[in-house]
Amino acid sequence: MAESNINFIPEGTVTSPEGFYAGAVSAGIKKEKGKLDLGILFSEVPCKAAGLFTSNRIKSAPVTLCQERLKEGRAVAVVVNSGCANAYTGEQGLADAAEMATLAAEGIGVSAGDVLVASTGVTGHPLPMEQVRDGISQLILSRDGGHELSRAIMTTDTVPKETAVSVRTDGSEFTIGGIAKGSGMIHPDLATMLCFLATDAEVDPDFLKSALVKAADVSLNMISVDRDTSPSDTLLIMANGLAGKGPVTPGSYEADVFQQALNKVCIHLARAIARDGEGATRLIEVTVNGAISVAEAKLAARGIVSSTLVKAAVHGGDPNWGRIIAALGQSGVEMVESKIDLSIGDIDVLKNGRPLSFSQRKIVRVLKQSEVPIAVQLNLGTASATAWGCDLSEEYVTINSQYTT
Image 1 (cartoon, rainbow, N blue to C red):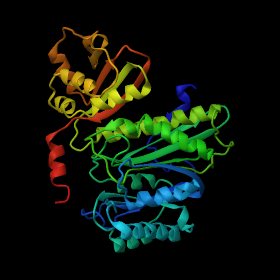
Image 2 (image 1 turned 90 degrees about the vertical axis):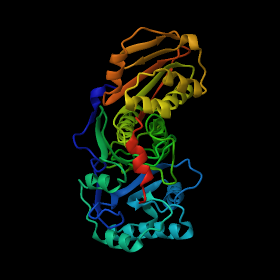
Image 3 (image 1 turned 120 degrees about the vertical axis):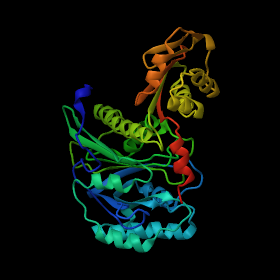
């Protein structure tokens, strides 16, 4: 498929696909007055739906509710809040999550069982249900409300994260849009993030779930900020079929197109999360080529991008490339030292395991760019993978030493 058939939509968001509406309000859940902190994403017709959730063995109440409701593979809406994660809250948390869904369902006139719930923020505190009730009663949904919703899910994020692509083939046209939040506690597989995806394509439900898994594996599961995860991580996709043209089914040409488009949306959002890591000043992109398998390439790329020493070196502009090789060796993947090549930006540093002559000043300039590309060639096979992360700054420590105070 030609690249030109998948195009990013200027100011695209989760409500760019046909039939999706959203809205957000300031309900007073966040400490900061006037900050949007409660919203709804809604489809005017029922959707096929799928989700992926935290790998943390302790899960928040909203995650538990979503996992149960998605067994039916359908949804009409998602109600979400920031400022309180509703995690580690026991039976009361489950009751509050269910009430959130019921309140949202009553407001938009759908069955409560078709409403999903997500929460993010401080853990160990009950939801302030009075504010939630009042906030939901004030919500007004609109076709461009995705922009508001993208801001309402932010916690320590400094910018909203949203995008959409339009897709055209000989047989169909459809749109995929998404929003995400995430800045700290980011580490594969999924981490303190919420990500909501919507499409007006008609998609076979089994294929929808498998496509989501594949997209996450090359995007949201390939980012790392600080090696921590949370109980709240939620990735949801809803497909309402309003674009028509028949269902996208496994093995079809349309399925390949849909997967490519979904990957683009998820990679865009993943890069935005990594770039906005808490206290971050640079995006780090690590590509590993020549691995014996994709799994090995992913493991190596994630091992390098999540290394505290690599992240600190990038922040300080320190051309200590040995830290990259140390992180590679620590990853546990198959390698032969005499076959390893390393480049930082367009500067070759290592060839066949031997250090090359290069200008350290040029390396420093690369490390001080807003985006720092690192490439490793293992020369053992044909598999490759890319991971994204950020530098480690003093501001990260400040943010996380004062999170609740």
